[in-house]
Image 1 (tube, each protein chain N blue to C red):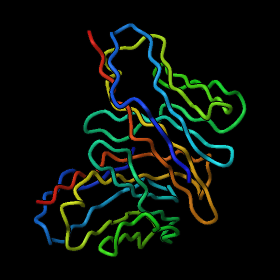
Image 2 (image 1 turned 135 degrees about the horizontal axis):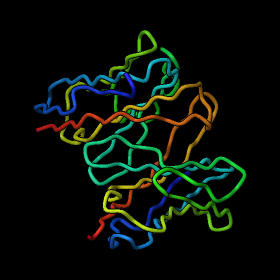
Image 3 (image 1 turned 60 degrees about the vertical axis):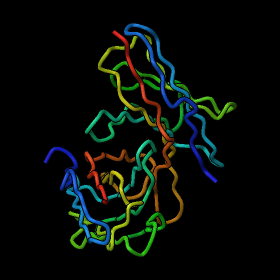
Image 4 (image 1 turned 30 degrees about the vertical axis):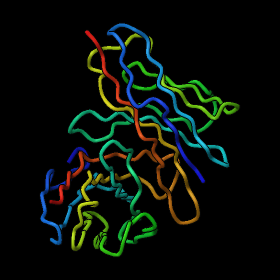
Length: 115
Length: 116
């Protein structure tokens, strides 16, 4: 069955430090991969997506992610974290079968940023 | 409107009550999705509409859950005889086209349902 694993429930980094959030997926075919961010009381906002082509994907707010097929991973990175990046981050796989389409989300990683 | 809107933002229900949650998708978006997000979890798929047709309801947890989109725009998720385990944030999302992995889903702010 398709699944998404985010092994880190909580991560704390200092402002200005680099960040890497891990995401591993289980999917039989070529996956469509997404990272979303959710701030308190806000809806999910798309940071970036991977469909095909270049395995290093650039997103909004200075985020990037790298698709590694051999490791079944799609880790999110940012070189220098800002206090406003504190939020919950979700990795998702897009799954389409005949007649339907849905996202399968990981359980999320909550990021805390220290001043 | 500019984005997906949902109402009410917060709903408190007594166990056994019926509730109705509304979603206004982005104008012109063909596809509409409902997700349930329990505390500390990622969103889980409930159901999918293409225009007014409900093409997938495989994620609805029981027959107490019912969703409709009669005119292909606004959607309502109804939960009958609410139970405590129904407490969650219910997210609505819409996307521009028909089913395609290339279509980004835009999410609303969610409705937080608390069942006492």
